[in-house]
Amino acid sequence: MTFLSITAGLFAGILVYGLFDVDFSNSEALTKLLLRSFVTAIGTGLILGILNMFFKIGNFQKKENS
Image (tube, rainbow, N blue to C red; front, side, top):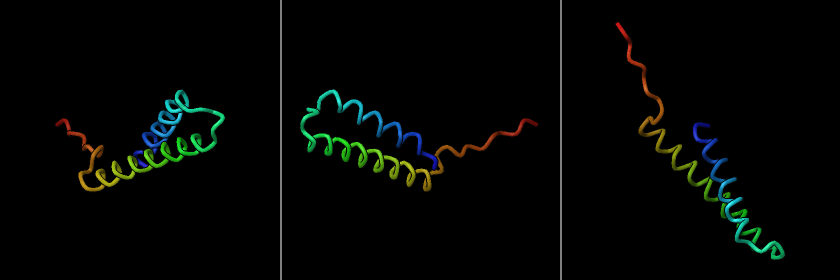
């Protein structure tokens, strides 16, 4: 759940960026674009999630002011 926003943003960003280059009459190219953006987003989210589990990225403890 930590990197869900990054995963969703990558998926949408790669999909929109790829729509500028793809031929809309070719359904195979659209399918490849959709799968490529999905796999890239899920893969990146998993890698960042695993790194978060091992290195505890983002769980910074606040210093107490005393």
